[in-house]
Each structure stands twice: as C-alpha cells, then as structure tokens.
Length: 415
Image 1: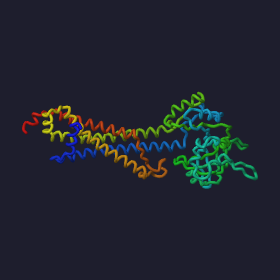
Image 2 (image 1 turned 120 degrees about the vertical axis):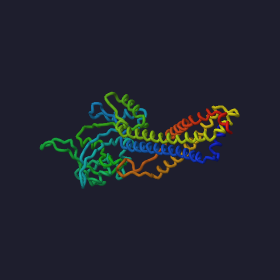
Image 3 (image 1 turned 180 degrees about the horizontal axis):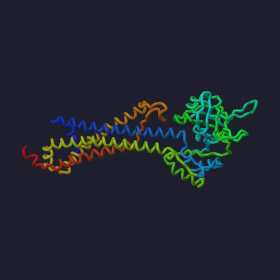
Image 4 (image 1 turned 90 degrees about the vertical axis):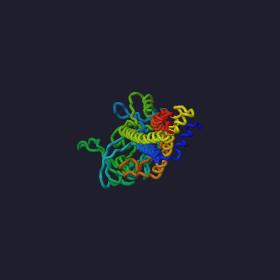
C-alpha cells in the first residue's frame, strides 16, 4: 500500500503517550456516526410519512380530474372516458357526480358528500370496491325492488365513522335530503330519497370515513334531478409522479374545451409543507455533522503537534510536503469514513426496527396514518455519504497544510 496510508493507519492504531488524543479520536468518530445516523433516521421518517400519506390520499382520489372549462356538466361522459383510456399511460377512467346532502339515520342527521360511481367502469377505477369492509359494493348497481309495489330503492355504501355517528348499519334505510329542491304546489321543497345501506367502507382517512358515501351514478343523477350527465372524469395513471405530462396528453386527446386538475395541485399545501420540513430537518442535521467534523480538526492538530519529530524525519528521508499533507488528510478521512459506516449501520438498523415494529404510534383519528413509517431511499443514503466525506475532507485541509509546512531543521534542532 502507499506509505502515506500505511503511516496514517499506524498513527490511528498506535498507543500514544498522550491518552487525550485517543479519547478525542474516539469522540470525533462517534460524533460523525451520531450525525450520520440521525440524518438517515430523519430522512427515512420524512420520506416514509410522505410516501404513505401520498398512498392514502391517492387511494381515495383520482390522479387526474378531467372537467369542462366552463364548469357545465359533461354530457358525453361515456365517449370522453373511452378517449381518455386510449391515452398512453392512462390506466382507468370513470365518470362521477358529487352531491352535498344531509343524511339521516336512526340516531342523528349529518352533512355528507355522496359520490356517484359509474358501475359500468372497471373495478380498478372505483375505490369503493377496495374500501368496502362490510356488505357488497356491487349491489350499488342493483336497486332494491319492492315485490308488491314495484318501487325501486337505490343502495348506498356509507363510511364507517359516518354510519356510527348517525346510527346506520348494513340493511338499514338512510334518508338523504338534497339542498336542490323541486317545485311543488306548496312551493320549493327539499328533494329527498331513501337508500338501502348496501355496506360500510373504511379508507383509513378519517375525513372520508366520517363524511362520504357512495351511490351509483344513475342514483346520483336521480337525486339531483339532472339528466344523463357527470361532473368529472376521474383518471388513474401508471406514473403518479408524471401527472403533469400525462394531463397535457389527455387534453390533446379530448380537446381544448376541457381542463385537468391533478392530485399534486389538489394537495399542494400539504406536500409543500412536507418537502420544506424534510429540507430544513436535513440542513439542521448537516450542521450537526459539520460540528462533529470540528473534532476531526482538533484530533489532527493535536497529532501534528505530537508527531513533529516524525514529520521531520520523513522529510529528511525524502518525503515531499505533498506526501506529508496526504498522510494527515488520509488520517482525517479515515476517521470520517469509519464514523460514516458506523452511522449508516446504526441509522439503517434503527429505521428498519422502528418501521417493522411500528414503534412510533400516532393518535387514532388524528392523522391518516396509525404509525410513523420509516422508508430509506438509496438516493438519500448516497447523498448523506457524499456530504459526510466532503465535510470530513474539508476538515483535514488546515491541519494537513500545517504539517506539510513544518521545517525539519527546526523540528530536529534540539533532538
């Protein structure tokens, strides 16, 4: 091996008369390890929370919403859905109609949002099939018919929290009142209909489970008194991170009379806050690594002071100033690399343990998640390693430069 590396390893392993240098070397290595481990854990926490929260959000909402620019209902929604599906990287598309209503059970009445589901679309396009935990969501397409009167009763799937708060269970009758009234001899009266509860759903998002219900698209049209129209075409795509480009392709396919709104726009405040929080947390912990690197400077300065005679002998035997400088730079880098490896092992191990055991629990109902997930990314690991090595390298420059400037004659004058 190069003699600079050999001597640097020898200096780190040698038993010194000054025990304090060994102690400071251990402290410097531990400080770098602690900084790296902290940064790995925090980045894994922020990444995990963002990814899991995003998965929860996207499980209940469309990746892209297609609607008319003028805000009018979409009449040709079936043909429009077929056009959208033919666009590359579009997985599914289905029409929907939203209605704000009051829904009454046996105990109470609450405001709710009913989503009309196009039951003719694929199951993958409608999240109600994944969320239903009791009953059968497929019954939405089959209104209940009274044997004697022949009266049809539409069906509804209600959020579990909403059902508990107003007193509904599978098989009950829910009375739905729409604010859009209809004209009667007594004037305008609220429009109301009765729905048979076909099941309960649970999405994991408290806001949805406490305020949402699913009915068929046809039932939503009847409830609102509208014709055969839809409000929005909901689109699922293959790459959720490239929704901007896919949205532009959809507009090119369907025409300029329409506009799109993707999930990133709908949830921009939340994801902007999470991104800044991850950035600021990373900067704070980088400062910790920088402070830890100051210990490397202290160690190298003390070693240079202790090894002045050795440096003078090396220079007398022909070692160049550059070689001496490299000797101490390698020594400082070794401290940083050992600390980095120990920190990586500790950070990755703790992140895996915390994630697999769901160590950090969250209050029920306060967040969309039950616990804080830890997801490590290779890009984060590589970035942390690169920054640690750079900071460690920079911390070696001044002590190594001082060592290279040492005059061997002055160092050996009194030996």
